[in-house]
Amino acid sequence: MPMKVKNIRGTTDNTCQCGSWLEHWKKFGGGSIPDYCSESKCTSKPTAVAHVQKDSMTDSSWYIIPLCDMHNHTAASLTISDGARLVSANVSQTCGKRT
Image 1 (cartoon, rainbow, N blue to C red):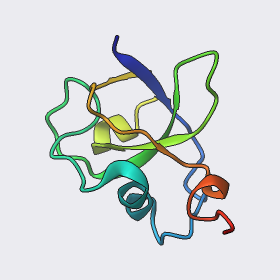
Image 2 (cartoon, one colour):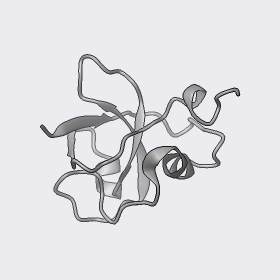
Image 3 (spheres, rainbow, N blue to C red):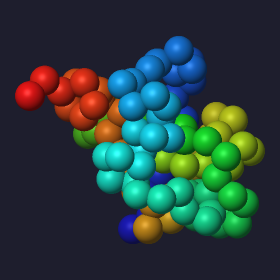
Image 4 (cartoon, helix red, strand yellow):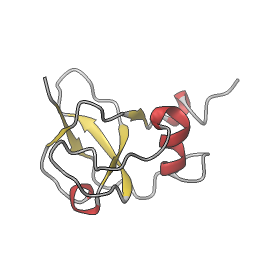
């Protein structure tokens, strides 16, 4: 079943200890940036990683995924491809975790 996500607005000032959200995405599960936007029908190259939430009543966690410029600025729900990797944007569980 395809997964739907929605962009979270107003996250520009959020930071992490990786230096950038792109580096965070790579470090915590994304690996290298994919050739295509995470939106299921888009063939554009990702230009940014976007903060998203699953379009779900049961999961209010924040994630980041690579999106093209057009999909990064959309307010509508997006259907993401099966291979898209959602990486947690919760820095207390990732790069800000105390060891």
